[in-house]
Structure formats: C-alpha cells, structure tokens
Image 1 (spheres, rainbow, N blue to C red):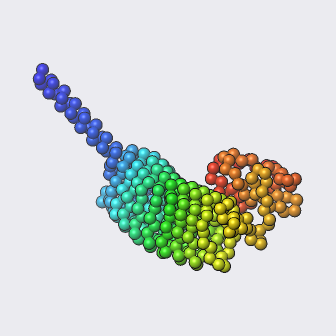
Image 2 (image 1 turned 90 degrees about the horizontal axis):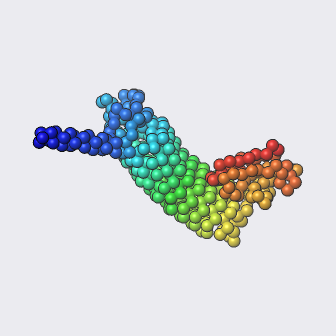
Image 3 (image 1 turned 30 degrees about the horizontal axis):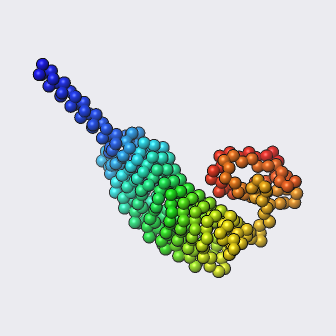
Amino acid sequence: MKKTKGKSLALILTFLTVLLTFSISVKAETPADKLKYTVKNGDAYITGYTGEASELIIPSSIDGVRVTRIDNLAFQNCTQLKKVIIPDTVTEIGRYAFQDCVNLESIDIPESTVNFETGVFYNCKSLTSVKLPANTTEISPDMFCRCEVLPEIEIPDKVKKIGTGAFYMCKALKTFVMPDSVKSLGRNIFINCENLEYVKLSNNVDSIQNDTFCICQNLKKVDLPKKIKFIGSRAFYRCVNLEEINIPEDVLIKNKVFFGCEKLKDVIDTNYTDDTYPKREISPEGFEYVMHGNEAEIIGYLGDDESVEIPGEINGAKVTKIGKGSFFCCVNMKEIIIPDT
C-alpha cells in the first residue's frame, strides 16, 4: 500500500513537472526548430515563425549559421507575441516584419540593428515600449503606423530622415521632440495623433509636407525652425486646438494649411488658398467643392461619419469629379457611395 502511494505521488510530481515545463516553454522560448529561415551570403535570414510563445527570444544562430536579418513579413500576424528579444547579430529588419502583431507590447532591439525598412511595426496596436539603437539614421515610412498606445518615442540624434506616415495614428503620443540631425520629413507623418499636444521640429528642416499634422485635434503648440520655407497642403488641417505657432517670414503656404484651426483665425487666414487654386465652397452636408463652369468637383469632406454618400448635385451643379486626396484625412470612414454623375 505504501509502495502504491509512493508511485502515485511520483507520477503526480512527474506530471506537474512536465506541465510546468510546458507552461514555461509557451511563455518564453528560443525555438530554432519553429523559426523558418533562408541562408544568403552565409547568413541566416528569419522568414517566418510557427510557434505559440508569447515571449520570444530569437537565437543569434541557427544550425551554426549567424542570424543577421529579420526578413520581410517574417512575424506578420503573430498575434500571440507579447515580447520579442532580438540578438545582437541582427543588423536589418525587413519590410512589415512585425505587421499586425496586435498584442506585441515590447521589443528589445540591439545596438547592432541599423537598418529598418518600411512598416516594421505597422499596426502593432499594443506596443508600449521600444528603444531605437543610437546609430539609427532613418525612421522609415509607416514604421510605427497605427501603434495606437505607444506613449513616447526617443529619436536618436543620428536620424536624418523621418519617412511618410511614420507615426500615423499613434494616438497615445503627447509630445515629440525632433533632434537637429533630422533634415528631411515625409508626408502625413502624424495624421490623427489625437493626443499629441506639443511638437518641436528639427532646426535643420526647411519644409513641412502635405497632411503632416492633419487632424491632430489636441495639438496646441508647434515650434517651427527659422529655416522653414514651405508648408504643404493641409499640413495643420483641423488642428482645432492649435493656438501657438511661430511662422517665419517668406514661407510659401499651400492650400488649406490651417483650415479648421479656429484658435488661430485671429492671426492667420485659416481659409487661405494660393492663387493657383479655384475658390472653394462648402455644401450644407460638409463637402468642400470647387466649380468648373457648371460642374462641381469634390475636394474635401469635413465630417467624421463612417458612411458617406456623395450627392450627385450641389447647389444645382452636377458633381462630376472627386479631386485627389479629397478624403485622405477621413480616418473614420468605412464606406463611401459615389453617384453615377
């Protein structure tokens, strides 16, 4: 009887040990057998992952081959991942490598990684912690696009360029300070960063491109450098709380740059359009349009509706054209009905 009890206890302990080991392996693992890879120029490129770990430690080598690159789309839609640790052998992360890792909260990037391609962390909606290596020279297009809860990001002082859409819909960002190493900015970098309040641009930036701060509803203050010579269309479109901005002399301001910036209307012409642009009007439904003879062209929409129906006629004029970028800043739009005109 005692021997039977002893055997039962041993079996239970063995079962618990196996269960505990399994639980740990699911939580954090270094699973060379679950990583897909290819070998190029004698180095391993990670191309995919089939594991179920929530915390992943990528090995520095696989089958004796050094891992130097996380390739395009390698971890796309790995929704179970919460934390990833990248080894210090990796120098490159490819296009959309972590796209749609919607539960990824943090990622450890080594100082060896210097090249980030387009959209590396696109739609990582839970990402709250990331530190870029000191030698980073470019924030690539769409790099943090739709990282909705990322509260802050420190830009290394060797970054020279911030690409198009880099922080699009980073809704948790409140301040953004750009080092003076930055010389080039892409378009629509901060669209719908709805909690962004303060931005300091690099003193070496000479232009702000189209839609850069479009619908940054809580943006209150922007420090522009003295070198600024050009501000593109809709750059501060509907920044309804913007109340302080220093604009140097001789700046070329394009169309609808400050449209909807009601707190600036006493010091800036918020309806300004340049001489090459037809006079715009607004329909009762909130459509911006311009006239071409007896026909109307839609050039914008001021509403926030998810479903929008474009009228076939505005003030007696047939709607025959929808202009480029007319609904670009309509981030809530899910459906649009276009008339047969």
